Image 1 (tube, rainbow, N blue to C red):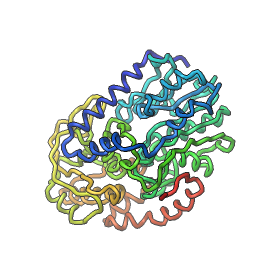
Image 2: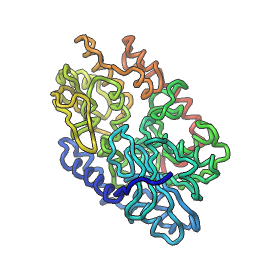
Image 3: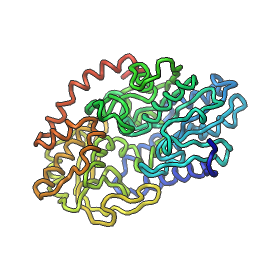
Image 4: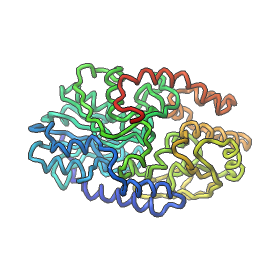
Length: 440
């Protein structure tokens, strides 16, 4: 396959970083996001990522190899972007780059297909894994000795980077190429697990594996489980290596790591949003705006018919751990690189703003259930339909039972109780694949 027209990879990566900095500096009420980044910059290094370890070893374990790198704008270490460092090294040959959803720039909108291209700085072909194919083809892998995955994930099953990783593992296995994961922290930590497992009929690119919505695993641990449990066919002979982090513990918050936060995608601009996303993401399957097209995606939820005052009062009365709700009015608009055509564009909406008070106590998936319940009860009282894409909600939640319980008038605690046996079973199943302890 011939690479397409030149893609200004490094300029785009810098642009994505600038967007993230601008957003974190201008969002009202985003103080925690800024303080996370600020503390990370001044803290002594506590966690060394797999990529940083590879660089400090001067790529010794890759000596003489031709490398393919699955990467985006988060694929960075202290010295710069890993693609640049690999290309500059005399020990290895970087022969191909692969980009996930949102592209190597990290500025593509959700579900926006990305074209193939070429990195202007290195001249290396850039293949999109979110366009006409979702996994590397045999032609793309020709001439590669090892395929490496290094992308910062957010710990939510329906965030598609882990789906890209698994499909790339499959392609590497077919081609007889070793697969290496350079591990990075899970922003949700490694202890919290929540949500239904995915039923077979709801397996899709947004729910690729039978795991909870919040799985509490790093990408490296999950790669080990995907292969070990046979979540995808054809991985039995895959040569998988995970270059683990040094210093990370399962009970760590992002601010404990000493690492700078980089927006993982256009609508996850800060750590607070990453923590809220697993629950607020349910609203992508509803008639409500999930805050796209504003400066606070996933932190603002609203509709044209809502009344934020009573909603906030109802939610705050439930005394959910680590979070508060305030009435909010907002108007989604087109934001290039963030929201090309957000729901209710140009309409004045009323709803709530979500603010974290204690990230260590916050339960994003449970909070998402309470939000759905409150907004659905309000909509029902006004003869409105909130959940207008039930099939998509089943994909996001992993099962139709989630919607069925809400539709039949189930209280949030009934929905949450429904997945507890799943979580207990999953905790035992994942145990052999874990790489990190909870405490020192």
